[in-house]
Structure formats: structure tokens, C-alpha cells
Length: 142
Image 1 (cartoon, helix red, strand yellow):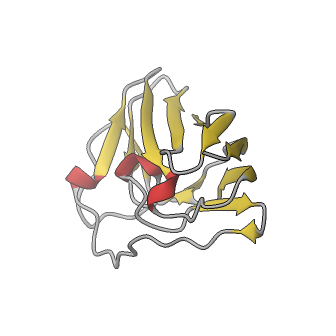
Image 2: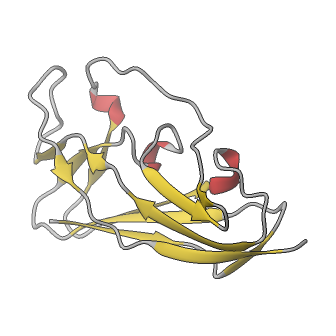
């Protein structure tokens, strides 16, 4: 029902932003509401990516959040056939300070997916795995 893609430039320079593109496409004939938590749809606010560089896996260095009950404002609506696209700067929460090859994989899940109407606060969450092919890029000396 939902199709995910990650995009990264093939090459980037050290010290410059490294923008990771994330798209989520609704292949369903129905509208879908997706809880944005722990996805790039809300920015880089949690450990849902695995980033590997020349020295191995990089530690996530961004904010972590303790969540309460999701509210309707925490969801993103995808109309049937629609694609949502966002970009996030990996360098804001990962140490991209060495030249060489890097890979990025999405390792999170969608914590709630609701068909049709706006989700009601405090309802049952319907988690769903989300498989995105990984991407690779190379950081070049400045």
C-alpha cells in the first residue's frame, strides 16, 4: 500500500549539507493517514536511520523524544496516489567528518497507519513495517 524511497546525491563535499530525500507514495485507492513520528516526515528526531561511513556505523547525535498519545496533528495525510517528499540534512545529527563512501538505510517502521478518516486521539495504533531501499553516496574532500 505504501512505497518508500530514499535519495542522496552521488557525491557531496565535506563541510557541506548532505541532503537525504525521503518519499512516501500511497498506492492504495483510499486516502491514508500516517503517524509521522520517527520518520523523516517530522525531521531527524530519533534513531530510524542506519548510517555507515568509512569507519563503520555512525552514532545518532540528535534529539530523542518521549511520546504521549498521538494527536491528529501528528499525522500526515496521503491522498490516494499522492507522494509526500521531504529532505533532511544528515550532517545535523550524524558526524560526516571523514571523506569516503557512506550508506544510509531506513530501519524504522510506521507507528500508525489509518485508512480513510482522520485518526482519533488515543485509538489503537496499527504499526506497519516500511521497507526502503538503501542509498549510497561519497563524501569528497573540500
